[in-house]
Image (cartoon, rainbow, N blue to C red; front, side):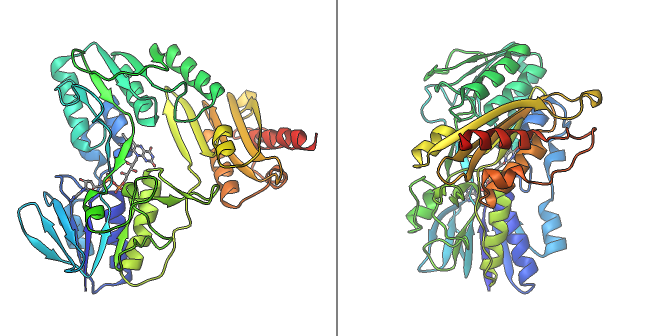
Length: 428
Ligand SMILES: Cc1cc2nc3c(=O)[nH]c(=O)nc-3n(C[C@H](O)[C@H](O)[C@H](O)COP(=O)(O)OP(=O)(O)OC[C@H]3O[C@@H](n4cnc5c(N)ncnc54)[C@H](O)[C@@H]3O)c2cc1C
């Protein structure tokens, strides 16, 4: 029995590793078109910044490690150009045909660059792969640009802006929508803007740029497009989000063919519908399930609630679930409360932390939340994410026995204060 995996980063290698655990006798081959495998793209902004000194530090395992320790063959420079499911084979760009019994598609996504005039010019970059980061680093070193334009105020744009500013460049972030991070939340946008301005990064909202030629350094960070083409041509169904449709077992519509990671949809547990929220945490989990099932198990991936966190000049910004406008669009009647409290006792260096909770007015079910501040953000958003996973109501959240001692929190945790405020509103 032969398992082929297309894609050698988070989802693909999680799938291969898990499949090996499940079935020691399986033949497993990973095909990766690039030169690098098993690297943490999430660390790229910190490599750009200089905190991570060598690109190699981001590489978790080598192909040699996979061969020796896990009996998994990882081939780099192996681009799959087509899949023939009736023949159970893939074709590589050199013309080689390779057979599979089971297939995991983990082809990831690519940055959207097509809409820009001049996108291929040498001063225009994306930050998606290890090679992108190395090229950008070399450009900074050799060309010594003084200013940079970052297009897109999503998390990659904002993290890149932070990294470039810390390299001494004058940075402007432009965003076509009126808000940042894809969340229509004026308070969140204001907090991010203030943070950026404090570190002398300019944020221009409602600004659309289509021509990037004739500038010093441009970073395109305008979102991702899932790599679904070879799958779609082979008859794999693509969902409304544009990513590969999978069931909870990560199985596509073709028997024996699985998909995982940034190329696939995931069930959103708050809306109950498929969503496209490409993140490393999800890619690893999906890959694990795809690999287990491709090797003969019947495991399931529960879904996502859209939890994300980033650091902007020392301020953590995180959210999970739905913002008010998204909740409205999904047919809920959202009610929300936002508080600013202390992250921990003042005499332990507590800093302001803002927590917003969104719930459905009718059922009191928690629908989402956001948190920002200089410390304690990760713990609070993870409580909110857990509550969302468990479909908790605000009154349940209010009762949670959360940890308290002065170095960590305040006696009323900010999440509990926000839950109380929301409860009060609901009672009115
Ligand atoms: C700058 C940056 C910061 C990030 N920060 C975070 C973070 O803080 N937290 C978080 O959760 N996520 C973060 N992410 C997202 C995370 O890195 C991705 O979600 C994750 O890498 C997706 O893994 P994947 O295996 O699905 O896809 P990828 O990592 O894109 O890997 C897919 C692989 O498939 C290969 N491939 C594609 N087509 C073919 C083909 N036809 N033949 C052979 N090989 C092919 C590609 O070359 C690629 O190596 C970040 C991403 C970036 C770029």
